[in-house]
Image (cartoon, rainbow, N blue to C red; front, side, top):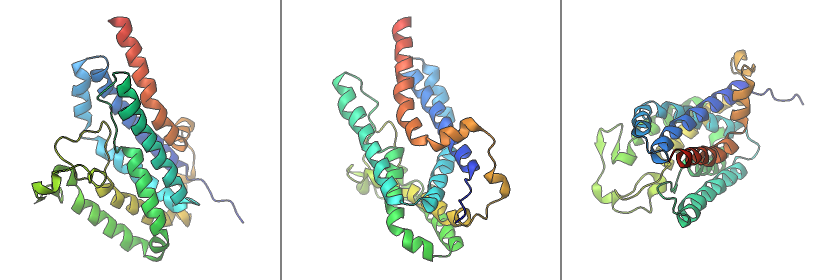
Length: 251
């Protein structure tokens, strides 16, 4: 049996997307740790374009779920890593007076959940025409986008305030005004963008992508993309630690 060709462009795009996320979060640390207000200004400015990197990252993760031998198992691992992040940021760090960085449902929680859901649905996903599945997923993403701001369909439909009285539905995008998470990705609407990737992943699985996508252009981006889970887990404590040392030296 011929070995499957690696789609290096997926690694490169995923690596680029996560590096963009890291740069974005770094400016927040400039404000939080170094106390420099311009860090918040840059962070807020970049918020307008960050969703583009989120889409790239989530879609690629969805595509890879179609290529994975065991999406369910990987989903459990990623979700467990997300829970470990919650343990560190919301339980351990506050014990040492480091507060404000609590992560209750971040990108790892969301991706892990999406992998588990998609893995469970994969037999059905594989039976549906990928073009229909991708179209329906895109429509559902557009319809539910804005659920975090009590709206749907990009703000056209307004949801009842009574739905947002509690936080137990925060994983799916519904939470009270008092809920805070330093990194937050809700399952809705992102499960639909993940499924969009899973459906179009059929093209990748059938090796019918443009030939240029199988060529390696950047070893560094490929390395980051292939190890995106470890990069995400390690980048924040490293950057936070570096800025903390700078803050102590310059105090």
